[in-house]
Image (cartoon, rainbow, N blue to C red; front, side, top):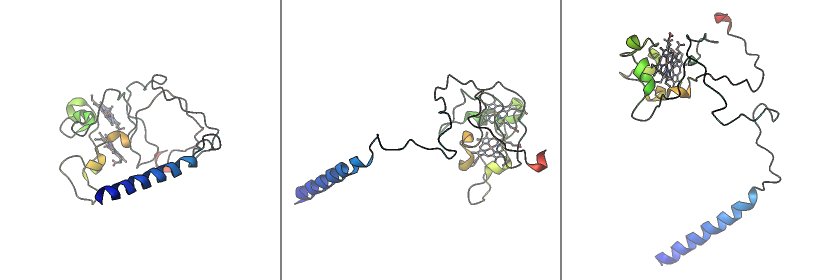
Amino acid sequence: MKKHTRHLILALVATLGVAAVPVSHAADTPAVETLRGRDVAEPELDSKVYRQERDRPPIPRDYVQQPPLIPHVTESYTITANFNKCMDCHSWTRYKESGATKVSITHFKDRDGRELSNISPRRYFCTQCHVPQTNAKPLVNNTFQRAEGLR
Ligand code: HEC
Ligand code: HEC
């Protein structure tokens, strides 16, 4: 009986699997479209084409809530579940000797607004929000104006 049920389930899975295949036909599926439309050049995926910009002083912000852009190379700075290279320089215990800006006090709050004694899990993966700069040309023109309070 049990074996019988198992066979039935396997047969059902197989049928569903086959039924799902004809949905995508490469020929008549339109190309993936970006939010800005289709006439945007494909970004070059080979990371060797673009170089990260050299270290420089902090980059002015364009609006006050902006995560500051990273003004230095980050190529060898890994962040794993157990180790965060960024905090080697940006933590409150290390920033003085490294000359880096200490992580913002907002980075110690959890999602329920509780203040933690160490960096919050929601702020742990720094490069989710902070991005290094490369010498790549912009894909599209950008007419963004710096926020009024920062001009
Ligand atoms: C070896 C030390 C070191 C490491 C590692 C490091 N940084 Fe930095 N970082 C600095 C220094 C020094 C500055 C520049 C501070 C200055 O000139 O005022 C800086 C600046 C920054 C700034 C700009 C701050 C501002 O106020 O504009 C950001 C953002 C930043 N780093 C993020 C990161 C992230 C994310 C990582 C990990 C991927 C990282 N850093 C790893 C030393 C480091
Ligand atoms: C979810 C987005 C997010 C993540 C993840 C995040 N940050 Fe930030 N960070 C921000 C924003 C937004 C600001 C500016 C507003 C503020 O201070 O909260 C900021 C500000 C900063 C500043 C400037 C502080 C100052 O006094 O001017 C530094 C340095 C910094 N972050 C480093 C880091 C590092 C290092 C990590 C990883 C351990 C990290 N951040 C993770 C969003 C983030």
